[in-house]
Every structure is written in C-alpha cells, then in structure tokens.
Length: 196
Picture 1 (cartoon, rainbow, N blue to C red):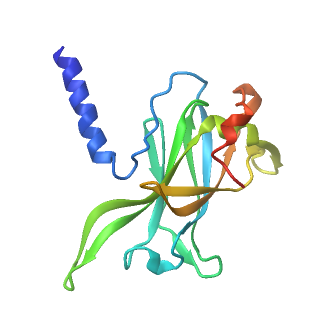
Picture 2 (cartoon, one colour):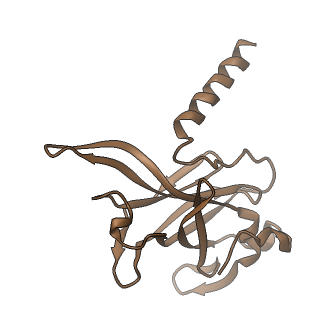
Picture 3 (cartoon, rainbow, N blue to C red):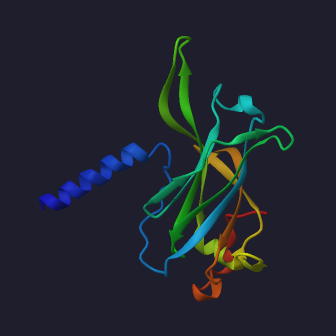
C-alpha cells in the first residue's frame, strides 16, 4: 500500500515539475514493435515574425518527447530571408506506432538586471502532439548512396498551440531505416493532425 502511494506521489511531483514545458506528455503505450524514428527539425516560426517576437536576447529551441524520453535541439538561428528560426537538426528516438510525439518550441526565461542576467528555466512558446501512427503511411522509400534504403516523409508544417491559441508553426520531416510495412499502417483518419 505504501509503495503504491509513494509511486503516486512521485508521479504527481514529476508532472508538476515538467508540466509547463511539455504539458501534452504522451501516455504510456503497450502495443506495437519499437523502432528508431528520426525527427528532422528544419525550422519554426512565431506568429509575430522577427527575432523580437521572443523575449529580448533569447533564442528558441525545440523539444521532442515520446513515451518517457525527451530530447532537445540546440538554439535556433534567425533567418532574415525565411523570417523564421532555423535548426537543421535531427533527433532520433525509439518509438512505437501507438506512441504520440509532443513537439514544443521553447525559450529560456531570462531577465536582464543591468549588472547581471537571471535565468529562470524554460518557457513553452507553443506545442503540438503528433500520433506516430499518422506518420507511418506517409513514409516513402528513398535510396541514398551512403545510407542505403531510408523511409522518409515530405516536410510538414504543424501549428503550434498554447492555451488554445496558435502561437507559431514548426516545419519537420521524419525518417527511419525500418520498413513501414513491418510495423503496419494507420487508417486514413490518423492523418488529420498533419498538413503539408
């Protein structure tokens, strides 16, 4: 009994610590064979375009959480030509077809106190949750000289939301070396969250 209560308390405390950055954490999944999926993070935009759309002196980064794993990119670079933050980074995670990947654009909260800067952790700018099953039917085989056969999707744009309001867009594609036919696909309704 005490073990169950202790586990419940630990889970609640972990949720309160991580809830602000990634509130859409995916639930545990039990089905499907795990495989490695690469999240190719191309760029992200914020509704108010320009580097001034974020707190002064901050650069955003993207976090990807799937199951109980989370990874983040390096800080983005502002592209005046594209008017968006560019990352050009690949994050590879082990996922299963019934997982959800939560993708969030975040930036460090920092205050300039004239004499020193005070950093207060990270704040979420916007996020989106993508069912892995919705990615599988879009994978197309591509033969690369060095890597061999790779299954890739086209570049997609996802609306980033915070408190029910669109705050930006993230531009990503997905890659894996594992054949989609070995994992099974999803029906046509699974693709409703994605747009080209």
